Image (tube, rainbow, N blue to C red; front, top):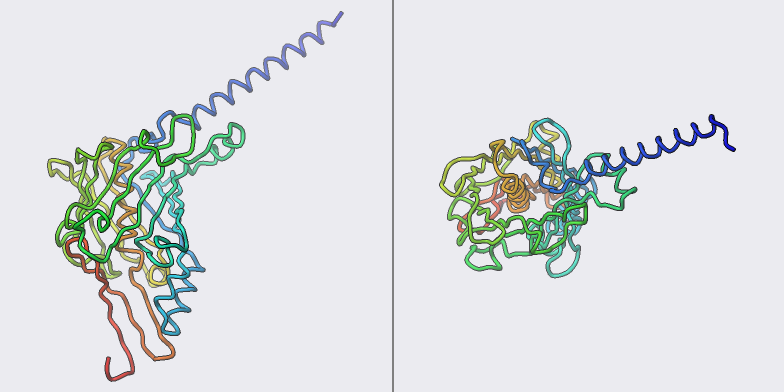
Length: 332
């Protein structure tokens, strides 16, 4: 017969194992919320920072140095963003998925190329638990088709648009699935006239949830902040998207030689979390539209010239870059 001490050890071991299972189950519940959009609850602002890609900056600089600025697009890398809440904590990481070659790839069509932006939860608990449960950290997907950004937004292929999908409950990967569509964002007919405009629509595409409208005509540039006002369907202001000008020379250089940009989305804390998620999608779309080439610097050593992109001019959805050029040649 087993001794009393041996029986007590077995009971203790069984209790510890049961407790571990309870703790593990609780951690899984916390890690894999039923609604992946819960991260937007009580959030009043989001700060989105694009990571600097040194290889992309080097390719752009090398191409411009020999008078082949257009070849700099061959070094175009997939964008990566960090998204922070108003508390300062990192809540999402966004990673672009796009083709390099192809008719809608980065090399030919950037920044209007076809893009899938995968958004992942950034906390380390998810990373650890995903190995145990087989669940993914991916909570949202932004799907943006290729479009023609150099002409007026008068037809579907010329209109900038994107769909936002949520991951299914339980932690599955977010994919293009109409049943998990959260909202859509698209340019209206003629793009809002002189002011770049995006409409946030519900999942059915019939009800307008919000409108994002920027300044008239002149967008981008490193000399001033760019503010995009956010209003609801009734025209009441509910927030804004702010693209901050560079804080110093190093910041301006980083933005000029790469696509790195910083944005702030400010909204009412009690705003519907689906609208907040859709407005974050709008922010990312604005980055691709106006700020990928902001402050582009081109120094042609062979010709002794340099150029600087001042801003983008917007009219009816068409975007035209405005640059200043200096050269030793008399014709300039």
